[in-house]
Length: 120
Image (cartoon, rainbow, N blue to C red; front, side):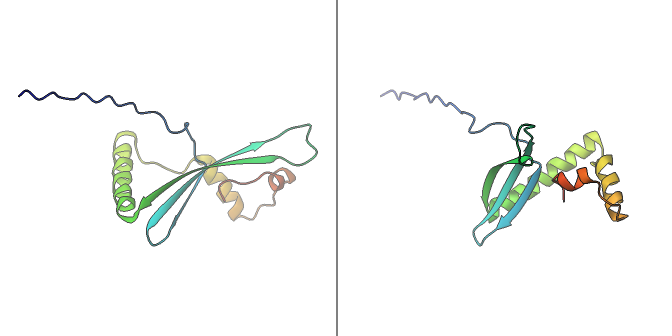
């Protein structure tokens, strides 16, 4: 008797949209790690009487402890490979400048006071 091989068609659809994360927080509980990727976008409407509106979107990834450890190992390897090919990843110059200004205790201008800081 001849066996028929069954052909399987697979369609993989995109679950979401491209997402740029400005901030990431990582939390855990006894059974999982929670990676919360945040995209923060200020929305300014010159007609609005209120101040700017901040649009915050989240993409959350939950991993069990074993997979979080494997993710850490893989991510470290990928970053190492990247740096071997393109050079060491360093803090961008504008971030270094603002950190120096903050360390010196420079007074903030009115614009700086009303503009949210996304990087602490």
